[in-house]
Length: 217
Image (cartoon, rainbow, N blue to C red; front, top):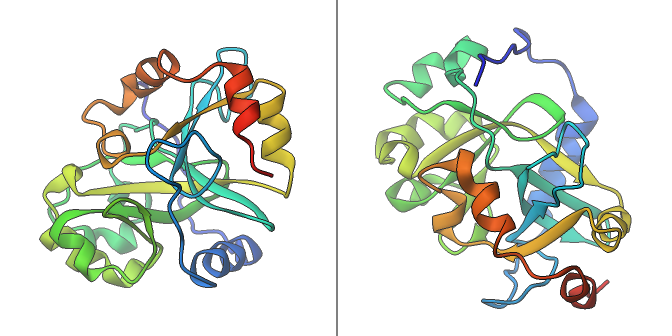
């Protein structure tokens, strides 16, 4: 994969960041029942082969929050060749010995970092549990502690940007055949080969009729 070109400055995407923070912190997340093919927090959205939007072609998106206000998620299968500190040098000290690469999390607020954390490092996170024992953080101030306690990329991944849909938009895309749904698990979110995740999940995703029938709202 060619080295990505990233902005050198953290743009003041104030409204996007406020909405993101408010959505995560307004109330706790509830996970969908294990094995359920439903749209909800912790669902993995698997782009259909026909989806050609450059932002989401062959993407796997983890739903962070889904409610009456819309849906927020991050793409979990697009690692770059770029170290997070190369994009945001002001975080270099906090990143310390972290050797993981930056993931393209989505087209919205691409200079805003989000962190998925599990294991011992999760104890430092003041954020919601998205998937079983996998927590979300948007707090740069806790990064040094997360890095110190994490087992590298097995426990901590760094994403730039996120994806969002207004109410009803994602459901319409699913009904149109743009996405299939798979229950999220820690093993899938922290897949050892994220670049192969779409191929793996596209083959196991339910049929279009099953997906449409599962939409609760």
